[in-house]
Length: 113
Length: 118
Image (cartoon, rainbow over all chains, first blue to last red; front, side, top):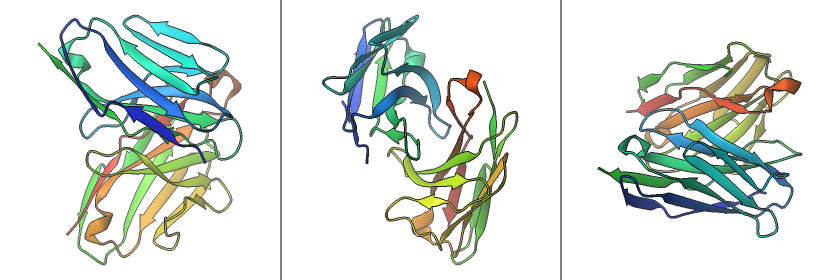
């Protein structure tokens, strides 16, 4: 099955700096890669996603890049703000089979004001 | 976006009792729903895939007789934790995928159920 690895596990940045979180996946058949933000005790919220036919996608301060050959994808947050502090999860999903998401281990982002 | 509800949001029970958690897709139909479990400071781990009108598919290591799943309609899946023990205490989250062609196949999560077994 799919295996998703995520780094780093914790990340502390100063307000206004950029943050980068990286994930690798194992199943070359995976074709959908969402990123979720989760605050304590709440459901994961989709912040951006990318499909395998696209190399990069951007939404305001958030961008995701995908390298299918290397099987890795990254989340980039620019101009970080204290309200960006949360746990971020990457995930991958295949085209066939059960089509459930396989999650990375999570990154706790702390933005220092 | 589409809405998935979950009930109850939290429950405290005694060891040995059973607890039922409901997951509903409020404005779309879902032939497939997913149940995840999340322990403190850990990731979401898929427990099982709930299939409308047929048996659930369980992930390796998840006891199907302990975690009973029923998906009786296109908008409702239930997870029953039978004979709950303290080690079952966790955050249980369901999700459903809107399979309409226009939906982009995004997966929507319920708000989660915090189960505490004393």
